[in-house]
Length: 338
Image 1: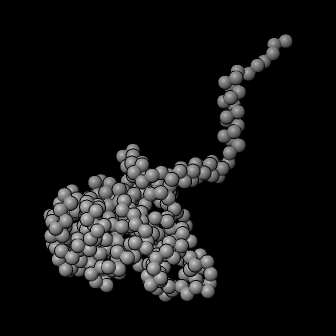
Image 2 (image 1 turned 180 degrees about the vertical axis):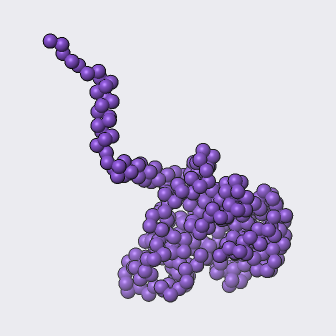
Image 3 (image 1 turned 135 degrees about the vertical axis):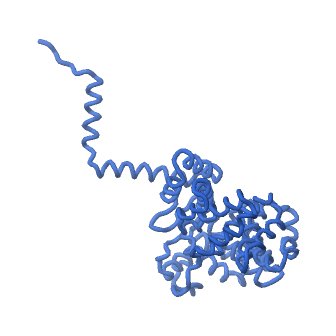
């Protein structure tokens, strides 16, 4: 009698076929979704520079659209931003720049308002960086047609600063080409970007000397840059108590207010939207400034998408303060700043 012994390879293939057949179509999609979820979770732990490099690889290998889709998978859940080691706003900048290189200013049509409008910043910033001062007026005209012109022009300011090789006054002269109050928004973006080049020792000793020598219309926007310079998620990270003191010494109330606003926003980013950690951080500032820290951070948690914009304020404040007895510094009727 002949013993029939199936070939091992045949058995292996047969077993594999049975295994695949056993997976229902929904099961296959569930497996794929699980793998994507795992990849997204891993990406959120990657250091900033590595995350940017990986995003650039996706853009080159696939497309800016694919990169944006992946960024949403990584950082968005039910409409709010998930915590991670990178700032998705900065990664959206990278994608926006790629959209401009591919589509020109029409790349704005590929962006939405997610991630603090980082994609839009990337498009107009790249246009300003590549085309310089001759593009400023066109950018302003385009930005004026969008829902949030100041935020759009702010993004252009970043690129202008690079276009003029980080010459602060040249960048502001370029912003002067924009008529009306939008020139100040451009200046804020240019100054914020230019702050990366400021002398660390001089800025730490006399931070407001940078702002007081500027034309009057750029002094308040400069206050915003001071708050961003000492941001907790930046290279000159400062304690909340120290930054509050620096901002309180601004030459004007308006400069102090925007300085604190920018710094308070950095607390939210540094704590990656951890509501309780943000609340504890505000508890470290001088008591006279605490309510403003609480109000600014609560607003930014909602406006930047770290919590769902549909989350009732009462519930958000309960998470923030841990008690219903605390008077919440924001209300459901407050507009959500964009």
